[in-house]
Length: 175
Image (cartoon, rainbow, N blue to C red; front, side):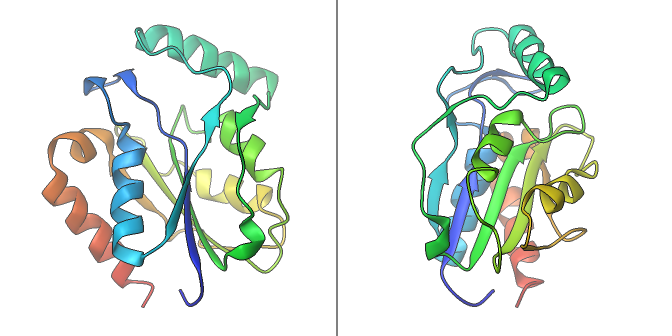
């Protein structure tokens, strides 16, 4: 993990499965922990059209429609990833898939020569092979397939000490 580091992540706030209504998304909690532990810069992927926050069922409908359509929803802002060597990419596992807005971000960039390390939040499905999909999308990058971090959203929200220990133990495997 030598070189300049960046944590790029998408996180959903509002009503979420298992944790109720949250002001700070599960993935954002873990992204902050990784950035703090590694000294990495952070960039949040924010869709131009936000996912519904008041109803998780409505969020599910939108996200599943995007998945079926293989959509690439517009996102706000950008960051020059060419300035970084190691890029952590975080997202919630939505039905065994990376949220489509994350693909929007990924497809804007040249990943050649980058080290990409995925991390996710979930509610029981773990990584679900999403790290392999990240590897396919980040053409030319060395992606840590099989070495990503998967933290349950319930742990990220309600057991921050345990979540921090998971992050620290995981990061230690890259030293």
